[in-house]
Amino acid sequence: MTEETDKLGEYIQHLKDERHESELPHPEKTGYSIAINILTDLFGCVLIGLGLGVLFQKMFDTTYLVPAAFTILGGIAGLWTVIRYAMSLDKQEDKNEPDASI
Image (cartoon, rainbow, N blue to C red; front, side, top):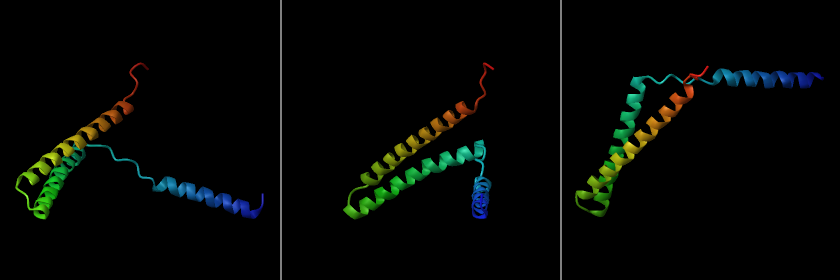
């Protein structure tokens, strides 16, 4: 090989090594981090629903039922998000369990 291809090969290997070093491992899910994630998802959706309800109430000059309806919809969306998150955690846990037949 020529000197240029050797340098190119070394450069490619350097980039591959750099990429592997920059990849951070996923932190383990602790009970605290799971609880914080669930609470922020749930309350965030409720607050967004309330905010949209109040915004639409001001824009369209409606009654208090619009913010109430959007808050309920935000709560439903938050519960749906929490359920999806719990199901994904369950799938990850099943994938990481060792095989009992070995």
